[in-house]
Each structure stands twice: as structure tokens, then as C-alpha cells.
Image (cartoon, rainbow over all chains, first blue to last red; front, side):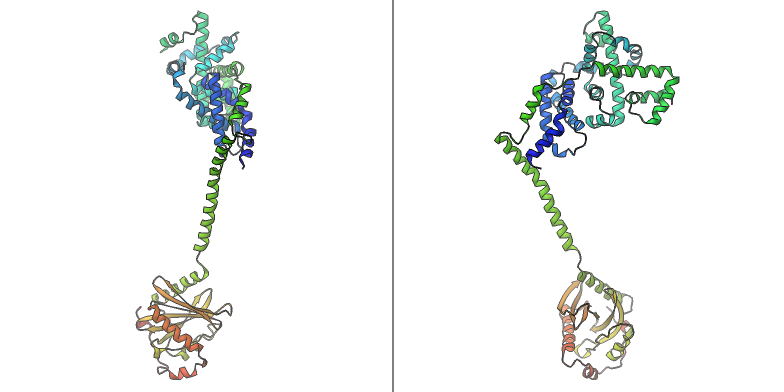
Length: 198
Length: 282
């Protein structure tokens, strides 16, 4: 294949998935400017590896590259990851969270039937550890199948399912806690709420 | 299906990723289990919440043109183009090398294939070795060519030339039927000191004559030629030069104008003497 032909085929197959690429990068790095850099870098990488692409699912293929590029980028720029420490704290009380979960999510509809739902969900999703955030984004925003998520994230299908389940549980907890906070008038003081829970 | 199993599969159920069988089982359980129903509703609500409320970040309009500009294209700047075509040339090297390698490889395989002659040489050596091994060097043990030659009558569809070269140091030991090159052949056995020599004769497939050719296989020496429509293979552990002596004697003998074996026959002092082939050690 000549280079112009290759470039043209690349543009036809991969460029249409720009929004998906940006959405994933944006959710992983949580910053507009960085997301643009990541997506551009991912496209250059994708072009370099385009010979290894054999016309299967271009979107999943590109998203896998975007994901890897994002993580590489996050590693190199770990410095301005605002939620990392919170993620870990939030992440750790797995066993104890079951009871909390049960009371928390007895009425998720009630929590979600509010005016600032959008802000709440976005904020809760942003606070999830990246591995859970990415499966939710791929599943709910990109409508990828388990199989596609498995190939994008490089994890087995069974893990896709359990990770999605866990992600939803964590998201539910988070939404509930935020709901309580706003009810109690305690705004965005996650450090203190997360503390006593442990 | 129990609660535990159901709970494990609920996320996939909510995501409609389960097979029909599992869906039916889970629905059956959900119909009777309030706890699982609640969990299912919760998961669906969370799914819906993210779907409905989470922001889908669409790429800003300028990003596409920015990427287009960064990507190498047919209209790209010269230096960028040069860089990419260089890379592309190097990418080409792989397939080119692979093709060259494949070509060389298959040529090598083709050349390494044993030719018909090679196979025949192997066959001749095997037959020679076998004749020594099974103590069956001759079906007709006689140094008399007039005993040996007629013995082949009715056993072969051709009549081989049989001569005794005792005078030249290669007494005839006997004759035997053998099978080479997919046909019955005449095998004549000569002796030179303690070495036994097998000579195989059969009609050639065409009239082409071929010159004397020597080969070696597994320490045995072979001489082959085609003459007067007959194929000759001589094989022995004998020294190649001595073997060539026999070949030369034989070819001279056959090639002489007095092809009628009569005078030779009369020269033979040992007519009628039968030898015991098995007494020879290889």
C-alpha cells in the first residue's frame, strides 16, 4: 500500500471514532486540554500501528490505543492527579461497604430525581478509580459489549462483568454519600466523610 | 438458581449480555426473590443514571483538523513526507526479505529433494547389503556363465550378458533375481579377493547411453552406466579403482567386436565349477 492510500484508509476507518476517543480520554484524564493531547498522540500511534489493524472493530481498536495512551500519560503526569488519594481511600473498604450499600441504595431513584443529577453523577463518576470509571464509560456512554470492553481494556469477559458490577456499587455508594452530604449541608468535604467510614 | 448465583449474573443480565438459558433461569428466580429484585432494580437504576446523566464529551471541532494536520498525508510537508516514506520503505523490507527467504528456502528444498538417481543408488546399496546380510548372495551359484545365463531364462523378460572374469581376478560367483527400480532385475555376483561385487542389469527405459559414473553411498562404491539399452549398476565395498577395473574389463569385453561370447567361454578353465557363495565373508 502506498503511503497516501494508507493515510486515506486510516482516515476512513479511524477518524470517524474521534468522539469516542475523546470521550474516553476525557473521562480518564478529567481535563479538556490533556484529553486533546492524549487523543492526538493516540491517533499518531494508531497510524503507526495501522498495518497491524486488519479491518475488524476499528472503534475498539482505537479505544484500546487511547486507553493505553491515557494511562501512559497519567503515569507521566501523576503529579496533577487530584483524586488519586481519595480513590484509594474510597476504594478500600470493600467488605464493610455492603451494609452501607444496602441502606444507601435502597432508593437510588430518589437520589437521582433531583435537579443537579447531572452534576452529581458526573462528580461521582469522576471520583471512581480509573479502572471502574473506564468500564462504565465504555459500557454506558459508548454502548460497547462485554466482548468489546474486554478487548479495549485487555481483561477477560468475566472480569468485565464483575468490574462493572463493582463499579456500579461504588458509584451507588458515592451518590448516596453525596446525597447525604448535600442534605446535611456538608459540601464536597470528602476527606472527612471518607475518614470515619474506615 | 439460587441468590448467590443470581447476584453474580445480575450485572450481565442488566446489560443484556446473558444467553437465553441463563436469562430464563434468572427471571424465574427474580419472580420469587424480592431481595434479588431489589438488587436488579438498583443496578438498572444506576445504569440508567449514568446513561442519562453522565456527560458524553464530544471532541471539540478543532481537534479533528489538528489531528489531520499532525497525521502524515499525501499533501504533507516535504520533510514529514520524507520521514514517513523512509519508514514505509523500511516497512517494505520485511515482506521483501520474507519473499526472498521463502524463494531461497523452497529452491533449497527442491534441490535437496533426492533425485531419482539418488533414490536408485540408495536402493542398489540396500539390495547389495541385504544380499550379504541374509546369506543369499546367489540363487544360482556357479562360476560358469553358461550355467548362470540360462538360469535367468523364464525368470526375466530380458537376457543379461554374463561373463566370467576369473582370468582378470574377478571370478563369477553366481546370479540371482532381485528387484530394483520397480522391476525384476538380474544380479550377477563377482568376487575380488574377499570382496563381493553385485552387478545389477536391467533394460533401460530409453536407448540413450550414459557414460560411466561413480558414486559413493555409506562407504560403498557404485558405478553405473547405460549401454546398448541396458542399465548397469555395480556396487561393492571394493576400492573404487579396483571396481573400475572390473567395469573397464566388462565394458571392453562387451564392447569388443567379438561380442559373441563363444571365445571367452572356451577360454574359461573353470567351466562347470560351482562355488559355494556363502563361504565368502564380507
